[in-house]
Amino acid sequence: MRLVSLLPSATEIVYALGLGENLVGVTFECELPAADRGRKAVVVGGRDTREMTPTEIDDYVRSQMAAGGDLYTLHSDALADLAPDLILTQDLCRVCALPSDHVSDALDHLGCRADVLSLDPYTLAEVLDTIVAVGDRAGVPDRASTLLSGLRDRLAAVTAAVAGRPRRRVAVVEWVDPPFTAGHWVPDLVETAGGQPVATRPGARSVQVPWSELTDAAPDVVLVTPCGFHLDGAARQAETVAPRFPGAEVWALDADGIVVRPGPRLVDGVEAIAAILHPDTVPQPPAGAIRRVA
Image (cartoon, rainbow, N blue to C red):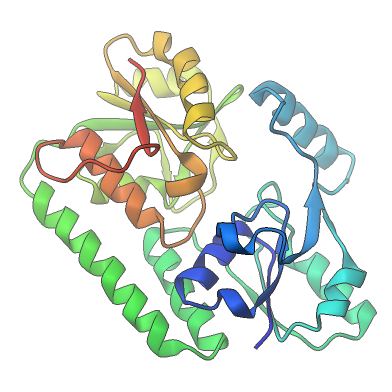
């Protein structure tokens, strides 16, 4: 089966299921094993925002959306040449990846009969369900079951380790300028890790909020997890946030690696957050996962 992934988290799921060799098309944001870099066709492009500030990125996104423009470009001819059997896409967030209606329109235009699976989880449980869905549609349900069992065992181990421990109040800043509080599955990560999420939107979209909503929640711990950034970028932004929370611990996390992309590594995120909140109960995460800035 020939697979095309139109979002980074789906690419992660594909590799976790041992289907890397079946993956023929990816996006410009997908993170691939070293051996596969440059070997997969890039079928979705977009603007490189790595040198932009959070404010500049927000301004760019808002201006594009207001003008009815697209943040991502589907290379339809390249997609057609790949002759995929299964395309993995989403409708969860127009800012994070190409919407599925763009894919369907392109396939209709090209006369391509690929199967399209949209992955749109809002909770941690639903993220785990997407692994099963991909495994089923890709013809490897047993692999998905094995992967899911291992992930659930790891979550159960964290739950047991933090059981009965005091739950510190945890705010999550998903964007710093303007401030966004975390939604979707992120509050579930905090809850599972033994924290009490505050000023979050469990199972709902992340939203812009005034700083007062976050500070008035009186968090003991602030996690800075800006979408689109790994640890170094998150740490730079966390340093700007820290003065607003003088009584709290402020931590930066590898957002793209373990928090904001709905794939198997969210379990790494739970383990990392548990290590922040209850460091004497769980192993410390690997280097590059978390950093305390205040």
